[in-house]
Length: 437
Image 1 (cartoon, rainbow, N blue to C red):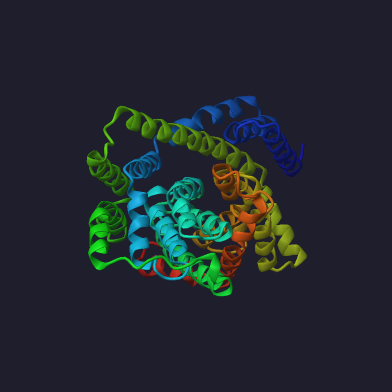
Image 2 (spheres, rainbow, N blue to C red):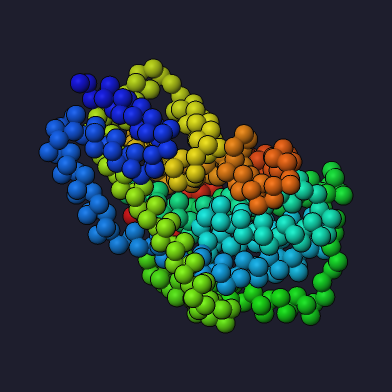
């Protein structure tokens, strides 16, 4: 069978398995094994199926995933997300829309120790939503800022999705972490602007809270010192060149554990929950990595990406048109699939295509994650919106989607800026000499 036809057919098999609710990692591994068997024979396919897990498990960069996941779980269990929210609330809560701004800031800060969008949204739904309702905020603004703020979890380093992209595309993890800083900060600024615009047009949606005295602000700051030190040590250690990413993950999980001891982290039920959450998520991600690697090797054997590049070049299509089509595709996938799935199932074909068209792989990693991030709050499915509606079933889905409208628009502005001005993401890693090592 022609390799290109076989590659397309196996892609269909993979998506069919996913439609039947076969876990993504297993679907990709089986499709890759099946395709390799038809292409090269069953003995090479069995060899590939057995060698990939062994090779991956010797990659020490994989250790960053469970450690960063454990750090986020420990920080959440120790109440550090609450500390962050109270800190931002103490300083900006007295402005119109201030609690929503505090929620966005808290989500951004917690993202720096969590790395998960869904976990960030769920955490701040528990913490921030009751307080915003008590202060008279509309359901639209309250749920909208939480859904949008939650998406920061997969972009602001240390993001598990950035690590996953780096491992699957053989990019330098630190380069992606640094490249995500400015787009992440830009997201926070645009979200704050969206809140201000929303409350400007509808002042009753986000009334100002009572101003907090400076003595209370100092007290809140003293409560939040743990999470501030954790973020400063992990991020400062990575970007300052004091730690490798692996070492920073190890230091981070140790600090989160030590800081959590006075908060009852040693209770058996808490530790069991943290370890179970970390283990289950780690296993899920590792299975996906193994499956994606097997499938990627099969796709490389078919030369399907190279054929796509040749056809696009022969047709004279604009490379930017291809990028825009891919962005639209990822937006749809981000609505339907979990963020990990949306990225992993497309990388084997899309990444070689992007590199073949001459685009920077680090830039594409940031763009890829940003557009998946937007999909998480995009109708009709938007994963973060469903998480919030599941935690507050009394709020109609249309209300939450109405609340994310301004944030969605600000996301599109940011996506356009980073897409057409790549230096927003690439300047800092290039300046620090970590862009392509």
